[in-house]
Length: 54
Image (cartoon, rainbow, N blue to C red; front, side, top):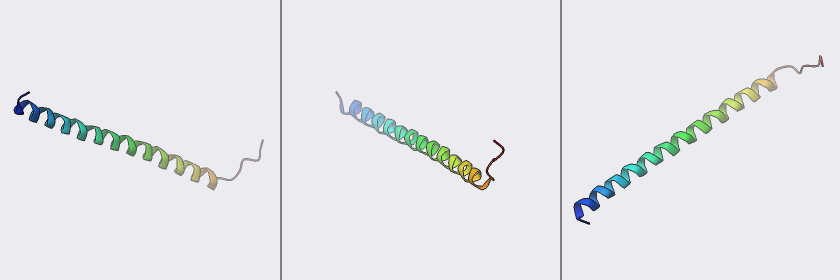
């Protein structure tokens, strides 16, 4: 391999790694968002009076 080809492959590898990091970070943010939404709903449910009509 020539040094030019090696440089191109190295740059391609770096770009791919950075793209993967962003994808993982985005997935982590999605999971965190779902967790926060679940917590809000649980907090709302705790604030409601119990349904004793059953």
